[in-house]
Length: 361
Image (cartoon, rainbow, N blue to C red; front, side):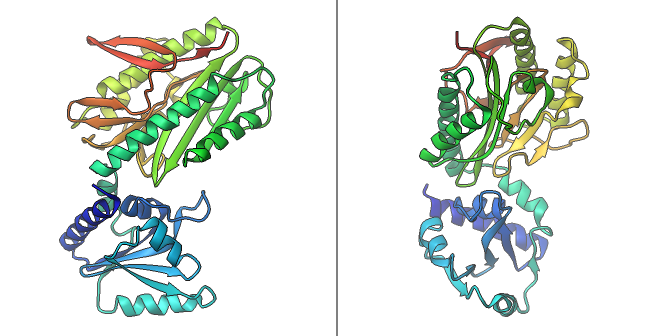
């Protein structure tokens, strides 16, 4: 399956859902939904939540509505010159013309907004297609391999900014967008759950978390490094790995996400940290958004095959995080490379290999 076929398959699914709900069409404006449909980059700035153009989808047409600045680039490079798409260019200096064009295109039609249709879009967007899964596996392995290669080469006195720069450089060379980089050295790793870099120099311990994106899909992972052995940190990682493995053991098709959450919370208590989960969310459903939703006590979401999840339990200095795929036969850790250091956790006769702290010396 290529990108155009995947795009048209998703379009037909949306059209079917629109018909059921009594709509004649929808205008896609958000970056997440634009990338879900096109598997392209619909943004200019990395932090954009809105795409720089919109896709108007009706029963009969697919129309790219874009300022003249972006129209040709998007059509050729991000939409593969898809012959099923009509392009309408709006002069950048005539913003009122866009409103008039949209009114003319949708006259007499009942057009949904993304907010109107978010429940249906969520259901479609969070089930990965075959094309998505193939790309997701490649991205996950590559993103994890790069981060691990960088982490095992950390040096004393390197700054948090330097490490973030190395990670960013390596990702961009691989056509991966580093949309989130969190780096905490030494005592900051135990103080903050989302540690933006402040420039501290590495003395012994590093906690590194990333969200890495390519063509809309997002991988989340964390890796940890020590220059010299610290037994307390090692022990905390062992306990954190047990919590993470428990989340993965419970995660399966047709399970309620709150049940997955409670299984991990119970394990926190078992390892001696019953209230640690209150210090940080535990992760949840991912894909075209870093967290489509978070696992929680009242989350009634039903886990389904071809959904992706990223759990991220923490215990003081320790954090475990990978991106996984739910399959009919079990959970596949897409960010597992086999080239790091792993804590082996046995649960109900199944062995789980959870990335733990890498000891340089």
